[in-house]
Image 1 (cartoon, helix red, strand yellow):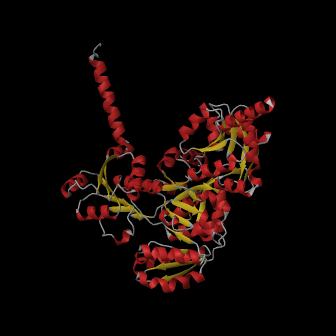
Image 2 (spheres, rainbow over the protein chains, first blue to last red; image 1 turned 30 degrees about the vertical axis):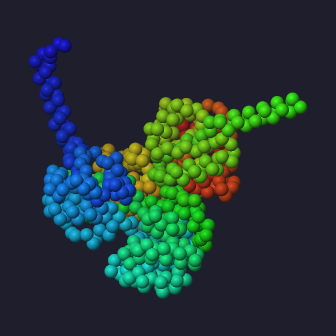
Image 3 (spheres, each protein chain N blue to C red; image 1 turned 90 degrees about the vertical axis):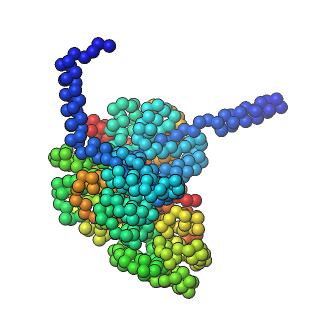
Length: 310
Length: 270
């Protein structure tokens, strides 16, 4: 091979340098070179695995991952990895808590943390909550079931008082009346459940520790079925128990929001809201439950349903 | 007697042959919507189409895979967005035959809505907007709506893809985005569901009217004609209408000559 003459070599080197400098000038490329450490509460289970997969598919950073279910990892190794990052992505409440306890001085974005408000506060922390705004769900109820007038909610004031206030506020705007019953312990459920179901067209099952036990959930679904009152729920697992409708956060959308927040943090942009709601919803409609329900479905709204279960 | 046996054997042979005939397919891809109900769509449409013969519905979530299929396959018809058709027609020999109907119309406009405190496109610089369309589709429509604005301003706007127009519009209320790109029909629906939120929105820009989804064919095939007839009759039964609703449609009708001309003018204009 003929060697380059000196002027050609110099010219090529100069051009290469210009190209490198030009590319470094582009903010997108700077973002690409940043190190993101994903710390996952347990990437062996789908709930935490799917957000990680969706993130990895969309992002363009240099990514390292830590799976907290990996028993071979020790605290020292985890802390070292976190300290090498430019930004941390914590998936799940356990991951969030561990990063907070380790006092690593790096910005963090989190997702998939149920009831994030109960987590310890941490500076330089941003996130996408796991729960859709109550108003977004009420919009869908109104859209899919135009005849729905009254909906029942059982909740614990300690956990969901503020959430309920927001829900009641929006419910008036969409023409649905919320009838709520507060309980502190699951053993208070039985006397109020039938009475509540007698007053409403459907029951809205929310994520709440007072009604989270298996027995309580089964009691709710059995009584609702007996009284022919459909149940609207927040997780796909309830379809198997007979929920008519499930509305949850759309995971690919959450990943895009996480990436957008990371981008803003790394570019030192002003961030209006540190923790945002998920922007996308995932809607599952159970046709078997619909056939047993007195509620009329607005069939023209079927294009807003992600999954129809027969 | 021999004749009877021969007839019986032949009938059985043809029946067996029909059983193994590869199904004639409707290939579907829509960059204007992100509703990822492909499994439900496939199951429901396959069940509906199977009552008319060996037909199948094949939805795609990746534009490139759909385009490859469109280039390489002759055993089907293609259900696609009119926006996508404008690009595909440049490299493929396609004949648009049917146009979708929704809300009694065959065209739609896209609108960029925001809250009333954002009054100009400049106010969206560096902010996020939500859209159910693909990023390429949404960028293209924004460029069309705001053709007088500098490209760098449009490039500074971040797009967050959400499953539906309703997600896009409601995300403005809850601060997940500064604006939403949606169809005018969705805005109208929002007014019916949540009039207070509708009243809080301001329109920053609206696109030109574009045709709704199209059914296009490649060449002439008897099975294609059968499928076109089946699609046109879908709106006549409750079962058929329910399947159409899953695509956000009310029915299909033949494109007229003036509409075909307009479609091709629009294709040339892109």
